[in-house]
Length: 172
Ligand SMILES: O=P(O)(O)OC[C@H]1O[C@H](OP(=O)(O)OP(=O)(O)O)[C@H](O)[C@@H]1O
Ligand SMILES: Nc1ncnc2[nH]cnc12
Image 1 (tube, protein in one colour):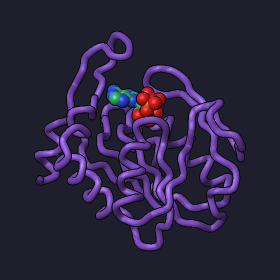
Image 2 (image 1 turned 45 degrees about the horizontal axis):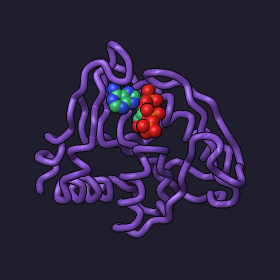
Image 3 (image 1 turned 90 degrees about the horizontal axis):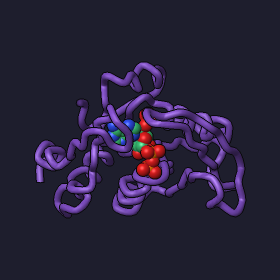
Image 4 (image 1 turned 180 degrees about the vertical axis):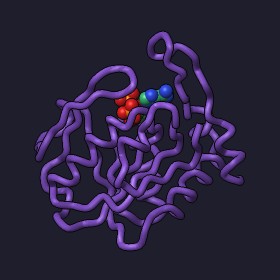
């Protein structure tokens, strides 16, 4: 399936999870095997040479990050919401379009000096990815690229992540 056809499966849901938010729901895209594969392959084409590791962000970033890592041969690091990891290297609290959250990085899985790519489903304000990039940076690794399926341009995430190599498959 062509990437542009796969991306037509992103669904818009008004007023979720709170009034005023237009939620971009990737469930229909994930449910279509050809579309999911097209997105996974499109991500792979965006990864710079020298990247060893995919850093995937809980929860929806896990889906795309794990598929990319498994199909295209990268290690996978999961950045998790609090209370899930038995051994935590570092944590950060951040705000996103509709609230605040905390991320934790597992101990001993980000190699200092490694080149990593951060994968998530949606870039909105950029708070989530900025927080994850901070964890990677403090672990001594390099964020070689950041890639998302959907970038919501009006929310300014790209500006907030200035200086990062940001790749978006769909800008809305
Ligand atoms: O650019 P931002 O304004 O930071 O928002 C983007 C983040 O919001 C969503 O995650 P959410 O925390 O809702 O969690 P989920 O993936 O666990 O559903 C989405 O998956 C991104 O991670
Ligand atoms: N509008 C939105 N749709 C889906 N995920 C989001 N994360 C933050 N804002 C979002």
